[in-house]
Image (cartoon, rainbow, N blue to C red):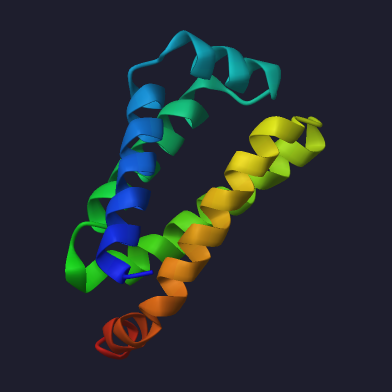
Amino acid sequence: MKIKPLSALLALVFLASGGAKLAGLEFEVAAFARWGYPSWFMYFTGVVEVAGGIGLLIGRVAALAAASMVLVMIGAVTTHVIHAEWGTLVVATVILVLAILRAWLGRNDLFALLQRR
């Protein structure tokens, strides 16, 4: 799989997911309430996902954005496991694996970016 299409796919996923949270869509509000998370955390997660989606479209920081989204998806997978939401767990796991793959494929960019600091 090529890096740019993978980045674009992940960007679409995170922009849509983050946008739904920022828009306060009913299904997102209900999910965060069901999980016992405060509403501010839904908006925070939305901002992080939208930022990650944008970052995935910017070549120099795409690998860093992917690595950051790996952390977000670890939280999502953990939440779905704790609440026994097996269907959404599968979807979240696929997104997690794709984010790991994108971060891995861009590891040289990521290391170069980190060495500049």
